[in-house]
Length: 300
Ligand SMILES: [Zn+2]
Ligand SMILES: [Zn+2]
Image (cartoon, rainbow, N blue to C red; front, side, top):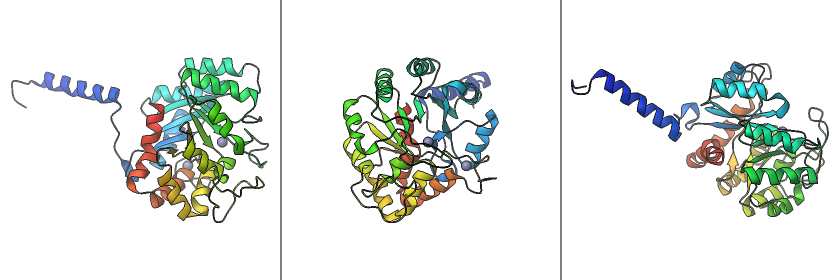
């Protein structure tokens, strides 16, 4: 450093560069997975630091916290404390008469998407159609849980009728949909009979999820949970081609309940299991799109 540029000026210019990179959203460093990682599907922990523990432990750069509009405070606190590491969506039970008002208020309060939406209604029902219209109006994505089979840890069925969902994709072309959960991933296979949550064995080509992703620019996919992980593992050869085919539409998510991003107490971290499988199956540039670029582009 010359005497002409003194220490104070130098420090000022460093501060200016740092501020500029924050504003421009410069890509963060790669970390242990060889690319920065966005987890599109994390539910808030009991404490702010509990969220940080999971993403640090799993080698995740940033996460979307999905929370009900009745319990937004925990997510708000995490975003306020760590603005470069968390953003948040808001959800509401769409069978409630004030659902649209509540979601509109949540968006005004800083939620940058709706989800996860997990309501015991038909995906093409009037309650959901009101939400799709709101999402288009506010230009925010809708992350949906599609489930056709009752499960002990997720009793009931939710947003039913995925096989006919192309009608909604066509009716709401300005709405960005993000699909998730067991019916979404099981329906990559054309022979899904909606009789089990995690079908095993070879995939029969031509399933609606594969078809809709190919035909509708407004549909994206969240690869979180056992459902996304089961899809990657049941027929790895098919999955590898699928990742390349839909490389601009797929987003890594965890939906992981483990406390530390290492599988402590649950025995397995779904974030780590799915990142490991994605890294194995996808070429490096496709992996980077799925774990970082697609999600950050969608969320701007
Ligand atoms: Zn879900
Ligand atoms: Zn985990």
